[in-house]
Image 1 (tube, rainbow over the protein chains, first blue to last red):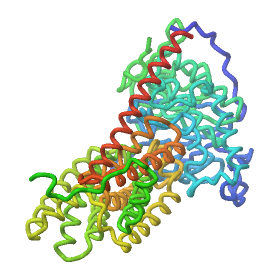
Image 2 (cartoon, rainbow over the protein chains, first blue to last red):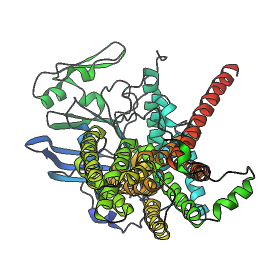
Image 3 (spheres, one colour):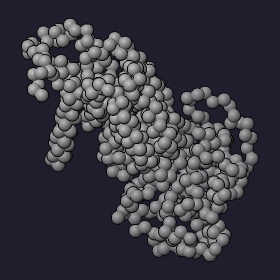
Length: 309
Length: 299
């Protein structure tokens, strides 16, 4: 059981104006291949307008309008099968929208976007996988590059190594980054995977259930690490979660996806009886326990918000 | 049948340099060493990725398929090496098509592979039966030979090896990414599916090459054991690759030399040395693990 963490006053995000039309042409400067994507400060990290995805005959979600500003920490919540991971796949350009538009830093979503760091839903590494954590992080930097790395071009190799060491330091994994990943604990693997997602200096970090299957103290420390990254490096974070309680102290806003629709706003505004009832179209009650935890009662998938003690 | 009927092999003098000179004065031994060296490099490099990807079963199937390939070629009067190559590459493409996977579906892959394997082995035995007087040839295809490797065979081995190694050099890093972390690799724009197919074809080429030295049943000696040994000893990809090739070369050269001085098939020696290397590596890792834990407990 971790020591009771004092609830931090949530930072008030100033840039919250939704849907202010921005000139799309501004960000269209030609990007040099391999160069660091330079995010224009004018663009939101992520903007969806009347976005919808239909798979087969079923609409996963529809009419989604949301904007995530640069450097914001936003959680994506909702019951199982509500389309949270689908949202991430659409942002990654792996799944096309059926309707509407989706822009990452002012550009439409494309596959292999280096401005996005991605941590997929819980991957378990085979205990026999004989590759170091360091190598895994390094692949996040240059793993998509073709051809053999030539030692003769030492400048670039040295810079890459320094960047890998630096990002491993940021996530606090220096002590064990040289060991084979298969031998590391879940929390240690998760830190290295966050480093891998972060190593190419993305402007938007997509984390799919990073707290899943971690114990309480690891949930706390990973949440706090993600907030540090968000504030310290100015990276916008979209974190898909099952349970809002371990992260609520660190969040700027939440997106709640349910019943094919979505709501976005401050956590206490979205996770409220009124908002969730209108989202689900049935009576939902949000209770606050004495220690400040939120418990949602009456939703179809009741497991997702049970307090986990 | 008494072993002496097979003719007595040359005797080693235990003067290593002298023995080596004796061994290399024959053109067929030069060819065998050249072929063995080419094969060890290719099998080592591709074997490293095969072990890392957990695709040993696909490699196993491809090696078994070499047998009907070689037998079919002999039946048609073509060089067995060509039959091996065609069958292995065709089977690699077959496995890739049948196990149509959105990654991570190794189960579908193994079912598809099993079906192909059974059918092709049966075909091989049919070919062998149809081809009368094939018994000696069957033995060589299954367990390997190092006599009678022609200059043109060495040239063909080298050509195929150059193609395979060049392709691997280009796709190596994305392949490593796709092998250990397919989801993130796909999100970063790595064509994971295309790489999987390409790698299976490379694996088919490597198997077809190695089968010509070790025989189709013992391809694993060069494809799995050196890579598995290296991965016991290091978790660094670059060092692991280098170590894999070094071990493959060592066991091949040793196997060839010992086979020259005995009457027994080369496949046996290569396999035995490779397996011994693996056992030693396991023992070393086990030993250092014990020492590490002991040290940590004391600290």
